[in-house]
Length: 623
Image 1 (cartoon, helix red, strand yellow):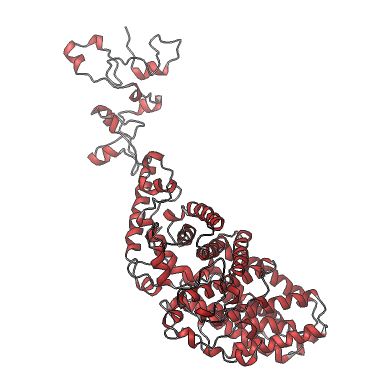
Image 2 (cartoon, rainbow, N blue to C red):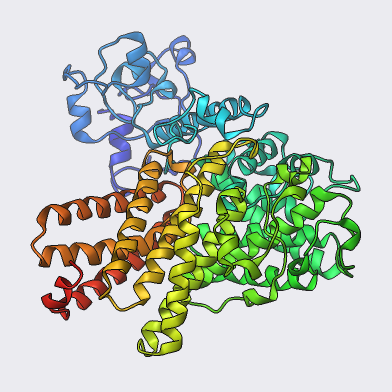
């Protein structure tokens, strides 16, 4: 009588063997892959044979059964894990090799290229990356200035902390293997782990200047670190908005919580407005939320938040702060009186931040501004340190009503960094609006021409009176952040000159000379930007330099038509420099790069169309 093995019986169909049963049937005492049932063994031999569960009785393919024992040479890293550890000659048979079967340890046989093992290894690498990121950011917790961050050796190539290089992207891990410390708190409002909170707040304070957040950093840090039940603790809307901004500069393991903090911020903003609680925190949280939406490419949502916050700021009277005297402030039904000069300075700076973001987004998206500039009479902003030590009381003062005053503009060298920044942005916005009016209307209109000539004079005087590019002493705690703010201010000032002069018909050599000089100064600042780390490049630098780029393209076309090859090549080098600077935005603000690319393409197309219809004789008049 012939006896067949278990594998052979499993390969037969149900009609060929009565022994075919389901996997849940009672296992037989049969030695694995042998042809002898227990009836042919003695009682002592049968007792020594182990019972293997049905899941290990996996049929082998006929070709694999035929190759068993032939001693087939395997390639590198093709053996199973136990055989590699024991340095045995494995035949690589799957799912269980011959040697593991012989030593009666088939349950240990596994291969490193198995998807489950790869997923486990990937998860281990991801957790190791998270541990390293926490250790690196822990070193910055004591000193959170940008200068300390730059001096640390734990920086990646792009300048940002090398926190997410070790994570295994795209690794699918079963739910039971996830770290319970990562997500358990998301469903509980007051259960945020201290490590995540400290990391996100540290990132927020390091990069808040990117969102034109110029509130007093010491007081803001102290407030955000208070317990939630403290009477001076910030509103949960502001707390979650700060964590949301901190996620932008965090490793991927923390960026995935943006939706959690965004949902909480939306919820608490509604609660703050409904109950009238801590409405200044509501304004600040709305500003941060709108800026966050801009960085993620959701421009209409961002403009909605900024516009709503600016209208609410008008209701709070922030647009009418005309004196630093605490007793002279007009009472407000929505905000309590200021306790000191620092709090008053925070209100001034927040109002101008909202005005600046509103003007920028309106210009980029082609939307109307929230409020006319003539309705604002709030004093120009100062750095937070000026309000803290009283230097703000010695500032020249003034407001937007002095923006057309040539004498006041000629004293720009005496202004602080934030005042220069606001004046530059407002001038660039005004020239952009005037240029759009000129393109839509009649350029021969005498009123429009007089207004354009006035703007040329205003912008030229302001740009020439700017101090030498550099951070003044005693500005604040972060000179690198102040330098980035000056980059936006100076490039906006020089682009305003180019934009204002471009309104006038292009047949005036004096106007062209002003534009060329302003473009050279703007590109000198662009070279400073090119050497900066990616995370220090301002998000709005593309908007500030776009008028300069448009002029450079037009100038290159003109020089090429006139046969001035060397000057055209030098202009092309400046254009390439501009494109490299804008390209650096991709590391932190990819949405800003997308918008800048669309604007650049439109400008180049418009310039080429204009140049094609311009005769060479008109160009020769300019020299």
